[in-house]
Image 1 (tube, rainbow, N blue to C red):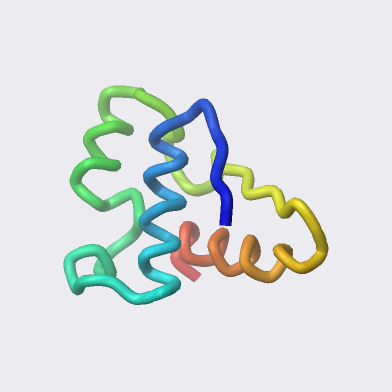
Image 2 (cartoon, rainbow, N blue to C red):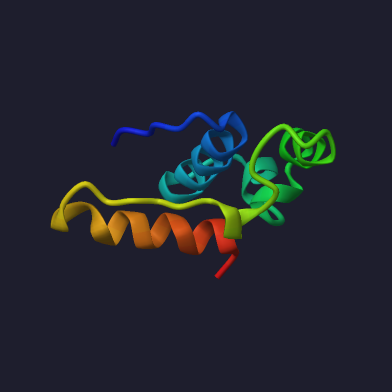
Length: 78
């Protein structure tokens, strides 16, 4: 998996979604992605993405489409 963005808040948010997809600690698993302390603070400071709807996850090929769909769902909390 490769991530690229000029928005470090979006990268952090997708990173949290990846951790959730593959299993992580209870603290990282609970609540919405943007409810994580560091992401909530970054949004307050207007440092990048303001929520999951502002992040585009673009698959590079047909094989990666499912993973991208899963990540978007985790970001959206569905």
